[in-house]
Each structure stands twice: as C-alpha cells, then as structure tokens.
Length: 510
Image (cartoon, rainbow, N blue to C red; front, side, top):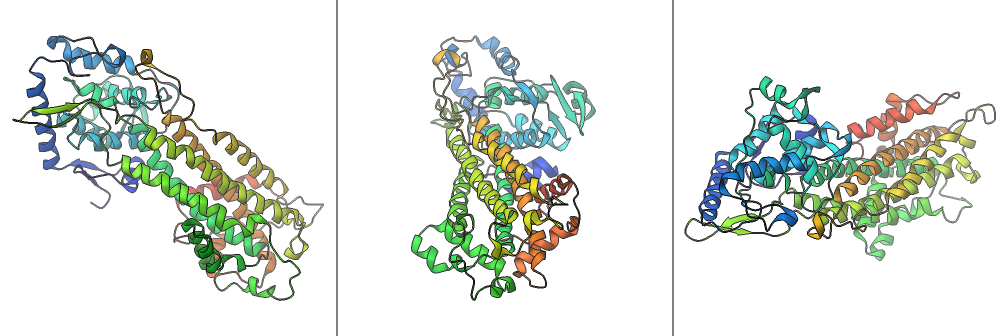
C-alpha cells in the first residue's frame, strides 16, 4: 500500500508525517520493532528490581522526584500523572496537528530507548488507523519537560478517558474505543511518563509547518517572477555572476529559479533597449538576496525538524547495560530548544518573504513608475472602478501581524515546577506562531498572484517565460480577469486554498 507507513525505528520524514496527519495513511509496526521494545522493557524491569530509586519509574515527578514510591503504587503513579497533567486550555487543536503529534510520539517510542511495552505504540497506531483523534487544547505546554499537557490529553484517550473525534464526530473516548474494538490502555511503571515526556507536539506540528511553508515559499518565488514581468523590470540582476560574487547559496538558488521561470520572456525583450530606468526598486532588484536569506533559514528549520523526527525525546532513557540489565540515564532530551529556536527564526523568514511581496504589490498598483504601462490599481476604468486598490491594504495588514509574530517565544523564560524546571523553551508557542505566519504568507502571495496576472495580461500579446505563463494559467483556471469591480475576497480565498492544496507545486518545482 503506497500510502502506508511502517514504524521500524528509522527516522520519520516530514512527508510521512503529512501523510498520516492529513491523508490518514495506515500505520503498522515491524516485528523487529516489537522485539526491540520487548528487550528494552525486559532490561528496565530487571534493573529496577534492585530497589534503588529511578526517576519517574519509582519516584515522583519534577520537584517531587526525591519522593520514593512504593512498588504497589507504581501503576497508580502513572495514571495519576496523566490525569493531573491533562491541564490544557484554549481552542482545540486541529485534527491534523494532533495526528502529527501522535505519529511523532509513536515513532520516538518505537526506537526502543524508552523502556515501555509495545502495547503503547500499538494503541497509538490503532487510534490513528481508526481515525480516533483525542481532543487536545492548544495551550498548556512550556516546551521543556516534554509537551506535558497536550500529550496527557492524548494519553487520556488511550486510557478510555476524556473526549475525542471519531471519524470527525465528537465522542467520549470510552465510546470511541468501544466502537473501534480497542482495549483501553492500562499503564505500568514508567509508561505514563514516557507518553508525555517528549517534544512530539512541537515536532509533529513543526513537520506540518515546514511542509506548508516550503510549498508557500515556492509559489512566493513564482509570484516574484510574475511581478517582475508584470512591472517590466530588467532581468539583469539575476545574472549568475552577480550571485557567485556574493557567495550566498540561498541567493544564488533563488536567482537561478527566477531565471528558469522567466526564461524566454518576450516582455523582457520588449523593453531591453532605450528603457530610461537604470535600476529597479529593491523589492525586485534585491529579491534574490532577501528571499535567498529566507530560503536558508527555512532550510535550517527543516533540518532541525528532520533531526527531531528521528530522535528519542523521553526521560530517562534506557540503554543496554551489562548482564541483561539496563543503563538508565536521566537527561534532558525532552527540552524543546533544538527545534524551538529554529521555529522562532522561521517567522522571520516568512515575514521577509511576505514583506517584500507586499512592496512589489504596492509598486504595481500605485503605478508611480509610468514605464510599467499599467493602469492605477489595475482598474479597467480608473476612478469609476477602484480595481485592486484595497487588495494591497489586506496584504499590508497581514504583514503588520507578521511583525508581531516575529517576537521570539524562546527568549522569555518563565520557570516551572518549583524551580526544578527553571529554563523552558516555549517551543509550542514558537510553532504556533510559525503556523500562523505561513497562513499570512499565503494571503500575501495570493494577493500578488491575483494582481500580477491581471497586470501581465495588460502587456498582451507579449508573453512571459514558460514557467511564469504556467503559473498564470493556473490562476486563470479559477479566477476570471477583472473587467469591472467585484469583491476580491472570494478570489483571494480561492487562490489561498489553491496554494495550500498544492495546485502550483508542479509549476513551481525546482
């Protein structure tokens, strides 16, 4: 089955997370994965039988870690942990985000360093395949001791408690599990902690954000090329020698992509001689440098998420020791900073990609450069019809919100757990900001596409490059030309959806 995913302990890919989260790919485990987890669990139990304290296994949690728990209370300890930590507030996370979190959690546990039984992963897999999605409030994790609150809400459904969506319909978890013939999980030593002590919300949602941002960024390059010919700019600043001289890979890659999209443009040739303009505005001429820098930050964030999707972020970790025993190591793999910081920077990259597009849009609509040959606001009858005047306002409003989203979540530390957890990442806020930033980027790019195609057609019968014309044709498949004022909101919403769905992917492929 091409849309299936088998957990074998290897790193998950962003594409796999997307398939499970949004396309409901069927998930399974290999026999080798099951055996690896059984071995880890056996070593853990053999080791803790010595009666010594081991964090989270036979002790309390956080600042209560010095409290030793009696052996006959260890099951209750894990159940109490889940119930007490399910303290999220705010809006319920989208179903795809929760499913992405679940598959990231399953992937981490399946690597056999958490010391839990295979039934934990099998239960997560069963929920995913039955389309049972726990209700998880968005706010509650500080992104350091794992995504405790959101993961606890997921664990509640595994226990047959709390609420969920079953095939998109709200249900009690108990009823949903019963309908799907899934036995509620009974936790044993360490297993509650293993379910909630990782970065899986940040990693899962981050994978979706990287996927969406990559898609939006590619069409942002397409809209840049469209705007260049719509405004009759030169292509000279895309010269490969210029970017070789600057030595930045991202800028060179962006310039190369723009050259390919614009290759064969008749519009560029039409004003290559006797054009009185010596240079174009920065929003065109410096687009490779600005967008190339954003491109590099996106690569940085992608690499961090890809690493996390192959990680084990539980605590403590269970390694092989001597004589079939475990070497149990308490550390800090649950801390979110390795992905929180890259996700914070992603908002910066997105803000500049959107900001420079809005400036090109302003240039196009204001027509202060008469050499573009465009009408004010691309109106068919300037004055009587306002054309796309207010489209730029909407893009400006989106850019203003992006400015606020660029305030880092990671630099504002608030200690928790009686100062035991004294430096937190707040990665869930970073990924939520990045998610919102991507949606705003789509809004701005949709605005530039809408206007650029209208402007491009004012230069007919001249044609742009084949890549640009392919993008313009996709726009025209769903948006008619503007021959009289109409509400642009519907057109913008349509283009936004088409970007999100991947309608431009092939045309913008690198």
